[in-house]
Length: 221
Image (cartoon, rainbow, N blue to C red; front, side, top):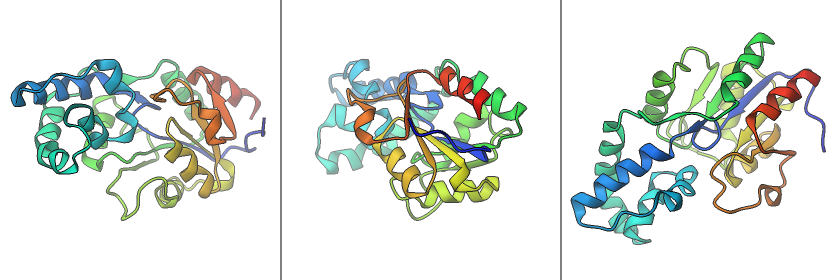
């Protein structure tokens, strides 16, 4: 295992499937959309595995791979998703303790998501994380999104954290690619929406099965 950077300058997270479990609300919105359109509702387990890949991937579970159909229903899906109020969205087990541990050590943390910035903001406010994060970068904050390293580097700049001494945590190959290209230490979130994949195949610096493991790792950083 490659050792994490010392001293630690910052820790940055993907949102859906890494920091927060938002799958139930995404599925609820999709179910409402399907009922409006007379479509079968995909099983929750199927939808959950796609959430990290974004709204379009979730919609393909219901309408297939016809991008014209996806485009047609995307605005209504997002309306229904916002209307859920994110009532079932919550941080993953161990995340609250991890964020507390970072803050006790004065290590800034942030979020880098491909989700639209307005939706990221709704979740962060709902969970009371908006004032705690040193950086919040959405999919439309810059012209480029993960796996491009630009959003990760932007988050580091906002948090005033040196990339080479920072960590990026994510549950999708795009997260690991973006973090690595930005020069950060990469951690694959084994607790996330992996879609049946083995995160070791993405060649992160570290794979962790539970967010609490990362909190314990900080004791040695």
